[in-house]
Length: 523
Image (cartoon, one colour):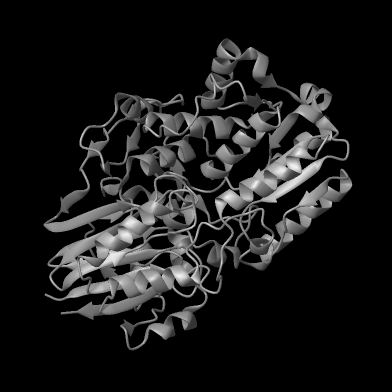
């Protein structure tokens, strides 16, 4: 049987990767993410896919592939497969696992819909970050990437089973790079901060090389804008298939990406599936440059500093923490930030500070009518261990000149209580990939102008040039280095809107530009 790779998403767009590798009766997915651009064509925060119809709506719009056998039975609305059995991409398959490159939702978001017993293979850091995302999540979007709340059909709708005696079911996660799981990681993994019990499946270690249903799989940690990112290689009957996930060379851990490139080249890969988010960038802004630029701005600011950077961009958070030390300020984090630091410390990320002990980290507790259990426990812990660094709006208002406030658009309500006086706003977050994100940026600008902040960093599609943000993605010369070093027989660009860039490799390799649903077979 020949190797077959089917690209169900992540083609001619940024994110949403869902790539099925089938070989010798084994099926492995490479990521199973949310395509935010496709979702944004039909949905927004007020109009979401109907959870009471399971995965039906996402099948209708082609955001999930019509693959019978991989989805949760409790999310299967009656008659769904009769409706989609005639779809050109419909088939029944078994999946032996998902190779998860990292914990950004455009790579992991649709794990929520997969069968609970399909194992996830990733790094220990990505595993605990996924759990932190779900623990602290909320809202209309289904975020059951680590454990699932069972549904049942009532009144022709799929509804959550509310009996407390019916526990959450934890997905099986297997982590690369660890033969023995740290006790702190086990403890965090088994923690359940809700009223419902957790039917726990322990984390299992599998070293740097694993055998998954008779296929050898290798994993390398790589540099990206979130801790725990990795690349994979799968030894198939047709040769090695290498998948980059999301990768960059210009971050503080760029040496990890270089090591991956050099070691993957030794495999003489048959195929390389390569991301291409920013192929036209020649000289990317580095994290060191961002830190230096931000330091200069904070040093020259007398009032409040608001630092707006991407969620889970821990490298940026640590840069601002160092800036806070150098400028004699406190770095004020949100509860979700602190919870993420807890998760990373449980995974033995030694560069991450203890938020309860670090005297430059403070916690902002905004008023809420109801708090989730995880947040109540976190606030109680902060009150016990570091009450002098627990902040409310009144204290932030009084001490504006001695703080760096880590806020984003979704925290702006607090500014109405803080009443900032002409401070500084550093926008150090990701670029807008579509019109909807540009509209959000327009709202950010309105808030900034209303409170008289001085803005540093560019909002919009030119933000990469501002010097206040370093991309999490490999640049053009880096892609050239990657492809020329690995010299694959077949090159497949994904996670890109600029497939034409990859045509420069024609002659060196066979370039195949996939479209959604393309199946590529290699003997």
